[in-house]
Length: 235
Ligand SMILES: Nc1ncnc2c1ncn2[C@@H]1O[C@H](COP(=O)(O)OP(=O)(O)O)[C@@H](O)[C@H]1O
Ligand SMILES: [Mg+2]
Image (tube, rainbow, N blue to C red; front, side, top):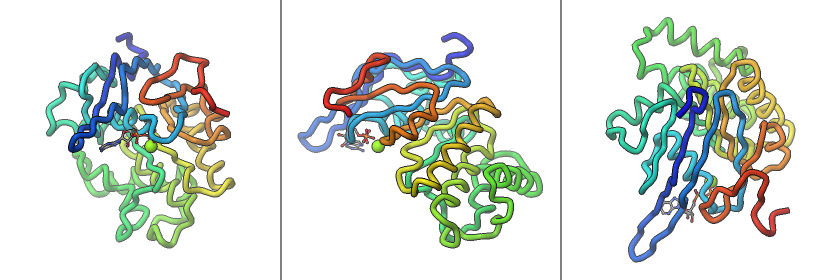
């Protein structure tokens, strides 16, 4: 793995076994993502996009194959280390925001820092900085229900970047947003990539969203298609 390849998958495979059903969600995926790249992953529903993101994020383990992220061998990483590693190196943005409703924007963004050595004052400083960066410096003490969907997603992005991770993974980040809020979120992600050098992998259904990325790869039935190839019947 050369220095500038930050995500490397080799023959990465994930199978789910439930009762007598055996689902191959991801099959022999080879992928290299370089530092500073902004990759969009597209493909039909159920093709394995989220499964791949979860493996990169150390949220799940492969059935077989290799997955190295920022030099760490995630397939071999002991369970207790996975959460800490993820908290430190990965920012994850979900389609449904996943904010904690009883916490303010500031408290939501502070949360990942509670797993670090930072003191309360420093945590607040970082959280305020992240919320200002996403344009929500005037919404620090609002609760999620007092924010629009676009604002909620920007709080979620602030939470994803507050630990200054190298890699940001987004699973349909604009899937629950109207066109205008979606554009704000996409502009923000592009800014994080261009101005802050964050490596981004974004799963999306939306061709407009995918155009913000530097390139696009397609997944079909658990297989990552070669560059330039789309699934059959893909519009
Ligand atoms: N926890 C799970 N248990 C069993 N099957 C799962 C699980 N997660 C995903 N799958 C299956 O794996 C396949 C890929 O799912 P997923 O990665 O969520 O697809 P996508 O994100 O592209 O829609 C689907 O067939 C899905 O039903
Ligand atoms: Mg999915």
